[in-house]
Image 1 (spheres, helix red, strand yellow):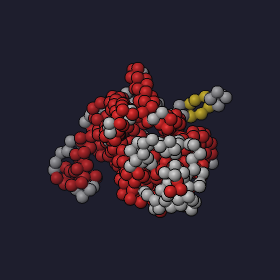
Image 2 (cartoon, one colour; image 1 turned 30 degrees about the vertical axis):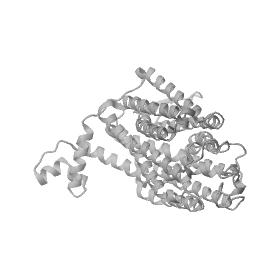
Image 3 (spheres, helix red, strand yellow; image 1 turned 30 degrees about the horizontal axis):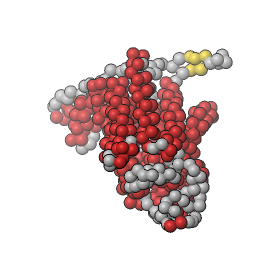
Image 4 (cartoon, helix red, strand yellow; image 1 turned 60 degrees about the vertical axis):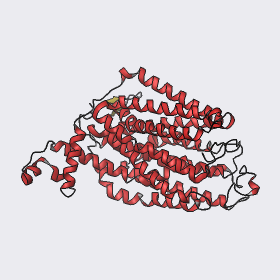
Length: 473
């Protein structure tokens, strides 16, 4: 999006510039972060998670096909590239949103063991299974596998540079088609929970009743309504209890917006930053493969060594502490990115106008800073991602009632959408020579929010019962 068509060092097609490309990227993210909400309603009320997941993947597949066809040289020659890209981004954003809302809870649904049980390891030692730890482990393994998929950036960036963008999009389309075929062929082997069709409408009515009574959910209880207004309501105290759990999970997720704001820089501004340095023949968007590599290396270390270390020594490291540490670490990553940007501006040939001076030879020569200087930011981000994303999925599943698990999962994406809106508001600063300040502001937001977040929600880590018995059965 940012670079012109025909460039060998920095492949591109539309020459939109960094600010417009960043805005379009943020709008794309916003679409995929807002779209989970309607999919969550469809999933929880009518179709269930598996059917909704397949519908989402079908839309995703259609978007990938449009992207591939309109990226063909003949399409670009007839100016169909940008309209095709925008259409594909809408379809893909909607499809990805549905997948993000349904896939994480659908995966955890497959673990149906509710009660603790004794397990014997290969060495003969006895251990007691714990559902909470198992759900945490499933979320971490899922995130680990998504980073293995992140290695696709290597062949994709090579293909787009050497053969054109259409070849990279063909690879994505083929991979997605295989996924859809696999999920369909195994459809009879999955655990599929029935949707709770009548819960959400009653929940909405109960919320509306609480809003009318000065935003007090307690005032929506059947007993309160009968005592003060002499009316019978169609919901019961169980639904109100479910709503309180749902609101608690949603509050935790929404307050993590600065975490998402820092993370989405990986998909736009950090790629542009790499393009301003000496690449040594490496595509600027290939350097981000360091992030999944870091996640794959550090994921097992954190899961197998760090978590058990804290557990054995009775050091509290519950979900809220993990998210707080993740926010602070995201702030450190952005602070490092700000330092790297400052370093770029301090070097020639273009100083604080990278790729724009005559010495850059038409934007093909970056400032005299090796792109490998950027690598640590992806490792710092990886630590934050491992602690943050898996924990947010864990909270979205374990705290939400059975009837609202997909909806709460959708709220995680809605929060990321809020971060994208903030990113769009910051986009005027996403240009030289303001990028040092932009990264510093994001770093400050992410780091500063960490302590008040922990202070406000710290009691959640003291709770023992995180999922009601029988909810996943």
